[in-house]
Amino acid sequence: MALNTIRDIVVNCAKSYGDMTAFRFISGKELKDKTYSELKAESEAVSRMLDKFELTGKHIALIGASSYEWIVSYLGIVDSGSVAVPLDSSLPPAELYELINRADVSAVIYDKTQKAMADGISENCPEVKYMIAMQDNALLEGGYSLTSLIDECMGCYDEEIDPDKMCTLMYTSGTTGKSKGVMLSHRNLAQNVENCVVFIDPGKVSMSVLPIHHSYCLTAGVLKSMSLGSCICINDTMMHFARNLQRFKPEIMLLVPLIIETIYGQLRDVDPNIPKEMIAQKVFGGNLKIIFSGGAYLNPDLVDFFAEYGVSIMQGYGMTECSPVISTNNQVYAKTGSIGKPLANCEIKFVDEEICVKGSSVMLGYYKMPEETAEALDEDGWLHTGDLGCMDDDGFLYITGRKKNLIILSNGENISPEELENAISKHDLVKEVLVRENGQNIEAEIFPDAEYAEAHGITDINKSLQDIIDDFNKDMPLYKRITSLKIRDVEFEKNTTKKIKRF
Image (cartoon, rainbow, N blue to C red; front, side):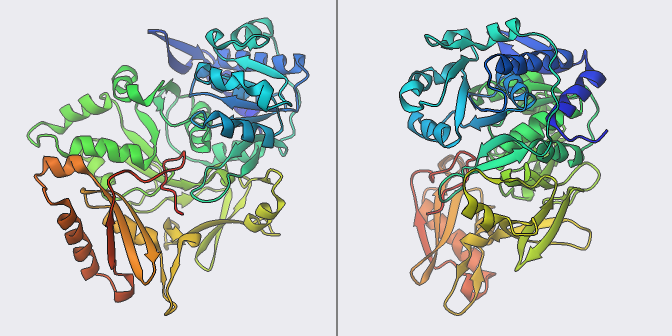
């Protein structure tokens, strides 16, 4: 059966995996399980709740950390024909109020970390009529308890859904400019799930680590894992990441390069005499076999490094505007250094090296931003990604840079700063790097890894970094050489997906 709506995913899961564990999470000091049958029933209760409040078809904001309550609310919202608006819970209240108003939100479902923000909704967001707390200890006067409402509204809900209407409004963070509301339909998301091919048997344990409001986590980490019958364990906080690896013992995880690089930093300096199997048991929980990586560039050397510990890293590529996966490596088709083969529902073409995508997972457009929509989507439905790339003879895709970041020299030569950054960042002393044009110079600004320097007896960090730049320049043509080095003592400012902001 083809997947055309998120409702199709929920129904198929309950039918195929009914009594199997869908989600495992920490409740108080205990582990709690929810089956696929319970997930369907409780999400339908959320749909009935919205119907009771005459909110079907309205925009409902979700604000909170990754949790079962967040997920069951999301499924109930979209499967009622309403629009879910996932928002970044790390944003300050003023920014959340602005996004709530821009998104025409009628109700907010929030968790206990957002009680202070929720308290200011009535004053700052006059169109919001209902406030629903995921946990009872976050209840506001005049608000509602999600748990109580689910109990009250249990029962079947099976309304017909238009697969081509918006079901999710997801704000992009970007590295420059104002965030844009990406309009995604049921078909966009369901087709992304169906066409993202990975080979995982039902019952395999995955651990959800990334922020739930990101499309990568929501689609690839939750909806795709559900479609495969996985037992999805929810990491409650990054503070408990290491502990939860031991507690849940996952076989599969979705991560971003920043987390992979952090784990690499922990493994890098371990005594080489300790058996790698023992280290893997201690660091990964003992069962981890696959990491899917996305969201940013990953140093290909890390793929080989993690393989020594029995962990395969599968690099993929996507963007929120594509629901989000565009291409991915998997257990059968993989090439180190590539971002994998395009999904079957994605056509790819190149316009002046820019990757353009067309297919059933491409967004409807940007919410109330017609000019930005016209700039991203041409008349024939091709999405211009802004990423530069190429494809090899075997159909594997590669990223070479960002179109907007290109440095165009007076002699007509073009430089992709990402190409230079990726080469320089392979050095362990370089924790973060940004390459840009500065007057007549190509400048590299570097935030060094002080812990690595201390562990390896590097006392003159400035000289060591200059040596790295000098060594890099030897193999570069004149126009690509770094002619200025700036060293910083604090990390770069980043967006919510942990990408360095470019100004």
